[in-house]
Image (tube, rainbow, N blue to C red; front, side, top):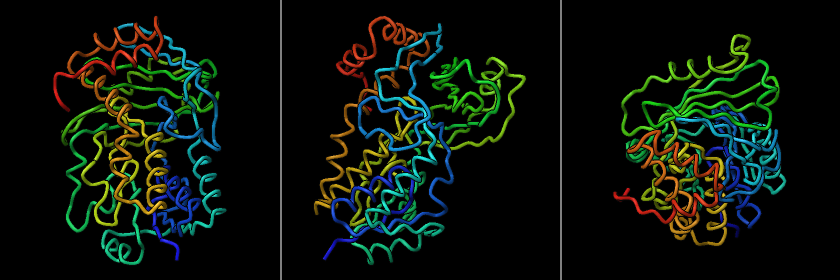
Length: 349
């Protein structure tokens, strides 16, 4: 008899887990609170420097050829050789859902699950996968584990703008903030639409003002007076992996629910896909206990390197980041990655 798996949440991690599990022979049920592709709260930049995920099967708007990034100085970095795309996440996730259904995944949309339902699901299915994002649904029962997410956060505020973005085509624009570890961004979706926002790294629950740096950044952009604000929303991104909680009996965490966003920039599409795919593979192989160690091994190079750069950024500020960008501009990103990976942090984080 086939082993059964229920996946909670049809985001990148949940869809990847369901698809891989079904392909490997599991009987999979995928429960989505709303419709697949709803509730997108993301800049939609797919940055996969370490090749953790496959190229998006759909929704690619363009390959990002340049990153224009400002610290103390402004640099134009060639990103054409790296896995960096601007995507339409709704289109991408709907395509993944279609593939999952073709693999006989039982996809149930508009199917909300409450924390009180988790115990019943864990009895009904061999495995329960929590890919519900921040804060993971299953971490609320039987005890509230949400404090585990409060170690390191990226807090974000973003907006969708309509206007003339033709001059930014094939590029991302980023500005590092002066007085904190954070940055503003502008990611064009096409010549007339763009995602823009601000992200600030912090520990604990202290509030930060995001509106002011975002407004200043937008006023610095070309054609600012002609932009129309279509939407504005914020959110939190966990940047500290919840290693001890990845597996609790037959319940598993993946993606943002596992705290797998980048400690350097807060992006998490690559790690969401990687964790979901790896988890589906481990469960289909009948080796659920191997998932935490396998995930650590898969992400260790990326997470360790990005944590080192983030730590130096927090301690040394824009002077360090400007030197880093200058090295990348002169010697290339690969050279920098090798040097930073060999560097030992003075503190064990």
